[in-house]
Length: 450
Image (cartoon, rainbow, N blue to C red):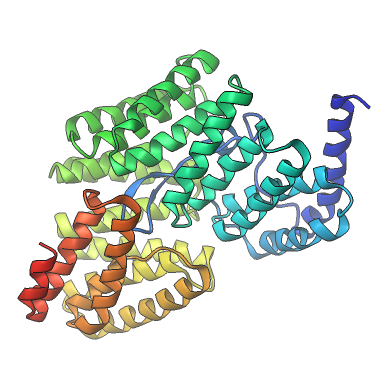
């Protein structure tokens, strides 16, 4: 049988095996990829570590509009059912199993369920190695997808190593592979978040390959400028602003609808850092409008922008009624997407308690914080997600210092070990510890973190 015929048989087997699960889900499923072979997208987000940046992998298949939507219970139940059947019903078909582990892993990734996605990507990697040997384009691609979920799952060092292995292998075994520039962009993006100089050469190489393959006016070309903005944000805010604006201008020129709001969000953050609060507010409000237009109201991207507006109206341009309405709207979206609660909702409850405190509504702030704290502890024990700082920050406001201390120390140690002492979020975490100990009347402890 020819390779093409074998590939067609494999595809038919995989599609037939998943049809019943799709029917059980009422016909709902992640949107098909728009760019072959298994594209990827980037989602603008507030990282759970406290870093606000562009995050997530950027392979061709993730440029789908349906990405990062956590889905309803029927979809997840059908996906869980499919996942449990791969290794039992297809035990004698390792190639089909490998492809299905990859497909299911990518579905979990798109739903934001990164721990489950990691399991399936690791299974796919093991099977690809058994099928094709240690060095093969399929193995390189599997390493890339594994890194794509390790990063948002709070393992940036492991993600970086997985990306490096994938890039080195792909350069050797298939240097013309269309996924290579996405690998370069993603590793460059991780290094950009850390402010490492090696990021720029990787991103420029990716940019050149994208231009060669897709031309000047293409989504992939535009999004590299956002990654460059992430890098420049560490040292040159004007240059970062220009890079983000270049991305936005390019997105607006594309003949198809794109997520312009996702590029406007980091631009708004740069303007906040430049203390251009009125301009930042205008950019973020346009970002919110674009996010709703592109994603619909019930989407985490919309919640991201609402969250940033709430931060603006809480910390920089105090309008507490606006901040309360915005963070409540973000929480409403969060709750629809995660009925059992997660660290994202807990973080937003911490922010809401901060707003309520500033409004003089201390009993409500305390109740809100207690709910967030309980959810935070349960979600972190269940999902093993990275630590957040909004809950302990609210605890400090309410003078619950002994409860805040271990949480703030955990945030600081995580950021220091993952990104280094010079990283902006690590510096903020250290500052929060100083503020804690000063408020607590422990100046000698504060001096340790100055």
